[in-house]
Image 1 (cartoon, one colour):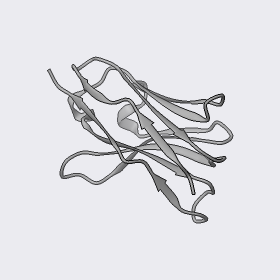
Image 2 (cartoon, rainbow, N blue to C red):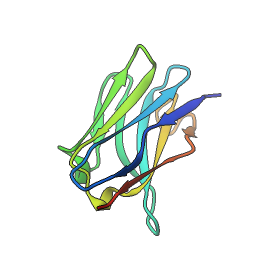
Image 3 (tube, one colour):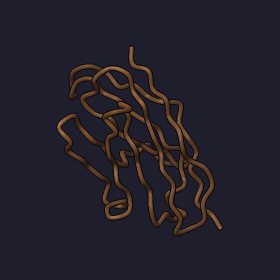
Image 4 (tube, rainbow, N blue to C red):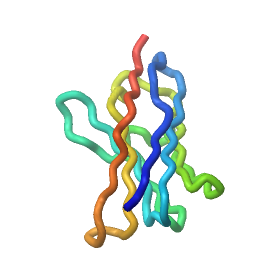
Length: 116
């Protein structure tokens, strides 16, 4: 069983910054952040794998950075130049094995609201 602890999120003005963190137990193969806006499907925002490979959805490239804090066994998502369309519930996702092996573990979600 994987334990996830999410932190961060909140309300920020357009152009502002926020940082999300996800601490996970065990030795994850990958830690990802997904988001889901009202009326939309959940989408992958960013992923980092155990070898350091990162993946981003096109809409956040150049603005968001995902990184690992090995000392804390956690992953940070630094979100800069935030836009109103970034407003969503953000979920941490952990996989111990690459698909199609294993299963997904999800955090409870944290709200990010970008509004003036």
